[in-house]
Length: 136
Ligand code: DAT
Ligand code: MG
Image (cartoon, rainbow, N blue to C red; front, side, top):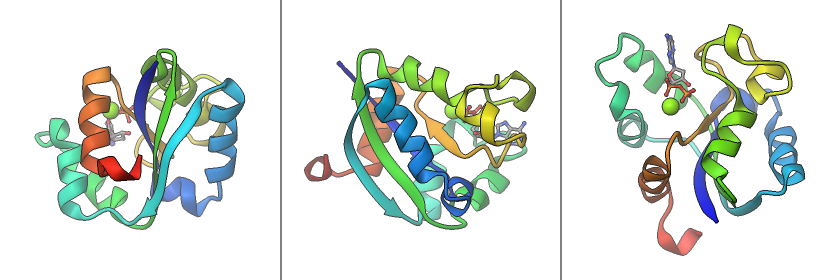
């Protein structure tokens, strides 16, 4: 069993896609093991996207993800990291195939609804960043 950090970004919450996204992961057979709604601080958002700090879009990204409430979650299942990344779809809109969350609901590279950890190591670090052990 593997755990991954999944976050519905402010655009997903505002577009009322929270239920649809949770439904997809539950239907697939994954288990929701933690969930909370919060508006991220700039500090947490910057730490979360630290790997992108030199990219030209970094400040816009931090502005975006702190612009309103997000739904932070931990999901568990076999190969949960790869499985959820596949269900989320690619970052580039043209590469996000229909049937994926991004491929079905967005064509924008920044307002792309959802974050999912990209490796088990990053999943562990992100779960620690966003959740206290007592919340899981
Ligand atoms: P992903 O969210 O698919 O893991 P990423 O880690 O490469 O993608 O980038 C993090 C977020 O940064 C992404 O969800 C949206 C934003 N982003 C990535 N590339 C971008 C670009 N070229 N222009 C604007 N925003 C971008
Ligand atoms: Mg990423």
